[in-house]
Length: 227
Image (cartoon, rainbow, N blue to C red; front, side, top):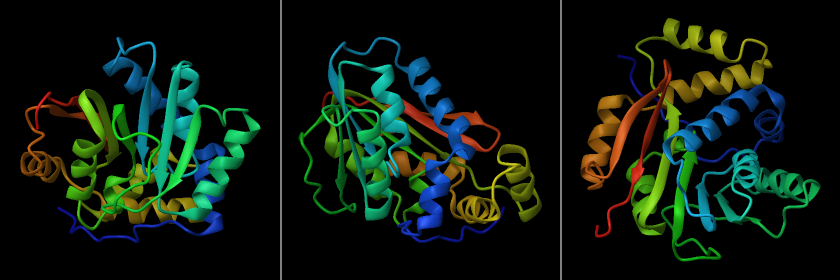
């Protein structure tokens, strides 16, 4: 198995912002929303969702269309990512439903709400030097019975396999995005590591680990009433 090589937790490069807000990752964002629809077909008509590591708000924007009566709040540690996200929110006229907050876990987040009916995260876990930061935040900010969906990359067995993933999933991406995805694959966790993290966070009874694609996992389920 390839040794895990951590990457920087924050993405502050303007070229990265343009790539993550651009069309090359649209399919991945679309798939995240489809998985959310599949796993949680009976959500309340009204509620609030929290996106941890929201980046340029690509998923909050799509989730707002899926759940027209919900508030969507996103958190990210990169001010340039949030600036891009806020501009996109303004373009779509969704300022009254989508709020983006600057914050870095595990610090206390200044959020519009204390708890949420759904907590989601896409491609954020692999950025964290301490993965427990994410699982503890999910426990902290999720309501009892909150819907939880975390999707991220899986670490390949070797460099050749990593290059094949990039060729298959972002074949036409600019060189910067291809390099960034390679770094992300090296920094990703294995299914065994993710299962151990859930055990450590006392979430294994609530959340299930599933294969989302040949190179991605999904952790989904509902928080229990009592931690």
